[in-house]
Length: 358
Image (cartoon, rainbow, N blue to C red; front, side, top):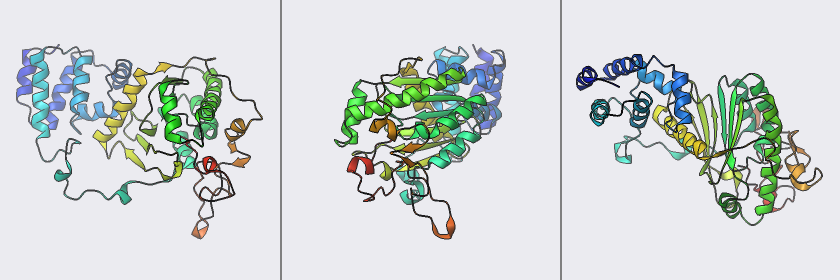
């Protein structure tokens, strides 16, 4: 625990660099724990501390967020109220500087709010997701409801990541819970509870086989309907990124606002979504091998739509049939549904045109 000399040092802090010196001092008094050790401790104790954010705070690149600092103090056993107040007061003095950008702002604080057209996209690009998984060096997170169209397509890429000792965390909703009923309501009557449960069972079966590759894959289930789908690539590293895809009512998968977060560019907002994932992850129950519900027969419609070779209903995800070629011969983005002609296409019913594939 920090002593009086530490409190005196904190009282003089006015800059990010000075606070970084105090953080280095605190860590040295606690055995100079590595950033990875602190991050792992934080995830296990629901005290998220992204490795890159800790590194920036320690180096004086950027001050820590309030919650990150509190989590670090708990990890270092700083529990005295006066000591904690001294740390928070020092942080508050730094954040009052106009040169420090923080997420604790209102629209009135923005000189020119960003246009939604420059922020959101609608394309759910499976090719891009697979490329980012292939490039991951440390960890990959996938968080959704059933990820019915994603896990079958990404299965081989996840296997390759596991073979490179990349840790993979997959967070899905629990079968038979209230969240599954709410998902069925949100997806619309064309899907139905039974069909959604079939897709979840198929994907848990795929993940069950991947668990044989070792301990790098973790799967957890939670009775909570997430407000968005999240894919994170190396979220604890400096160059980490996330794709966030907002939920929609009615299952119109192709009309969902999507945005990307980069750790270097959106440090505090990146940490917010990191904390959200970590909080739900810790509230979820670990999935164990063999727990997958009975899957539908191999020849059933649900099994064909979620076949692990990347085909759905006999059509290749991201194939030439998925979308017309772009001007100049650029490769089209894959249709995330795996169904050509999503809007009034080949006579598919509404459920096929608008699958709720998150």
